[in-house]
Length: 558
Ligand SMILES: Nc1nc2c(ncn2[C@@H]2O[C@H](COP(=O)(O)OP(=O)(O)OP(=O)(O)O)[C@@H](O)[C@H]2O)c(=O)[nH]1
Image 1 (cartoon, rainbow, N blue to C red):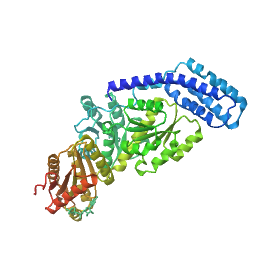
Image 2 (cartoon, rainbow, N blue to C red; image 1 turned 45 degrees about the vertical axis):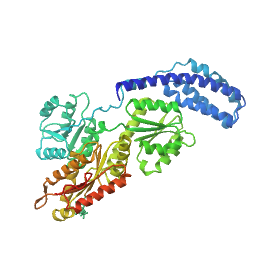
Image 3 (cartoon, protein in one colour; image 1 turned 90 degrees about the horizontal axis):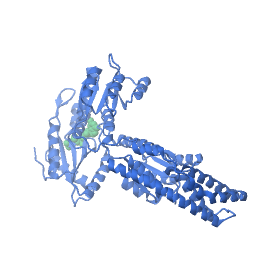
Image 4 (cartoon, rainbow, N blue to C red; image 1 turned 60 degrees about the vertical axis):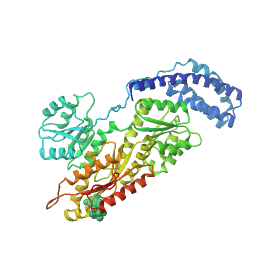
């Protein structure tokens, strides 16, 4: 978000607080007049329920805007009224009416407390803002490992995942290099021969204003080592023997976090003033926020907005927050979206009930802005990490079948909205059964992984790559015309054919075939596009394999 946009949001937040103060004065005067009109006795039933609701609303919202005392007074009045309504204690009714009568004057006399936490937050957002411009270069990873037998394979592995690497054997050499150039991440061996890897990592961190993502490699998983790692600010531990997929996942999670689009938060609250205020707070620190005041629109909103976090008011018209949460949880697609309740209820029982129904967190209004932002940030991060972990295929780290299909659907919808081009390609390794039969299943796995790495390296970050089946891959090429898609696929085909694999007894090579489909007005949806790509792949196989067919018409036979 630009400084201008932040200033704009800050201004709007200030105006909201000011407007809330004006509204509060009017609301209290109105409320008092309504109560005097109803007069004594206070009887349980319809006429007094709106008064209780209005008190409840002020109690829940005033603190958020800096009128803490007004919130507390109204909460007391609300509880007093509830008691009178339940017990019919007419003696208390007179006191209650007198207190309500003096409420407008009392509120007028209160100076709004400044929201000191909110102001701090507004001037130094707690969430690091993403760099606006995505770096297109390959990320640079510094590795500190004095043992070539572990350091070198690690670097090779990283390079196969399109990272650039530099290995150092001593802390001095690493520090010199860091003074010249900031890497994108640092991987340290926890058990260097003579030096303390973690201490070096901490020392190097001091060279940079913004901390580097710090990883360590370790042969053992001792608790003490992990505790030291946590205290040194390490973001991930990579254990030997190295698992390339886990390594790539870990790096991608941390290095790409800044490049991900902002996390999406859906706020459901019938109080427009409250949800606007919370929306502005969250937008100010970089979230994309959608607000909803009608619970019955929740599923439609989830579908269209696909939130990373759902924030629900507990008291909603028509149904309660926990009921709404349970409706959301009926749908497997939204099972992993964290749900945070926001409520003015101080009742521990209601909170427990809400949490046992469905929900992950309960925040009580008025909530300090930094607490709201921290809770939403933590939940959004976990939600994304979980979604990424669940959607990745174990062998290749690519998107799984269902996920690439879902992402294709979204990509098609977006391309249509933007009037952009899109191509789909289906790839299949030729005679793969005989690769397994001749060289063994492990060698076969290596081939699949190599193709996955090649695709990751060669395609743009905006493209999507999925493992569609065993040795079948689906590529979604965004903003790509048919001729360009053909060129890219044919280059991939050539690069793959040039790779040499090592079997038990001898080296071998593989080829692939591909079918392309172009999004066009006649091709209705994702299934039709997949079928078209599949038909073209079949034609490529029929025509002798090791070729690309589609888009441009029949491919160039080889
Ligand atoms: N090593 C390994 N093999 C797999 C994996 N998934 C699927 N396969 C194998 O891939 C082979 C696919 O064979 P087929 O579908 O008959 O096709 P093909 O031999 O590739 O022949 P064409 O596609 O006609 O060129 C089967 O033998 C599967 O067992 C995997 O994860 N690892």
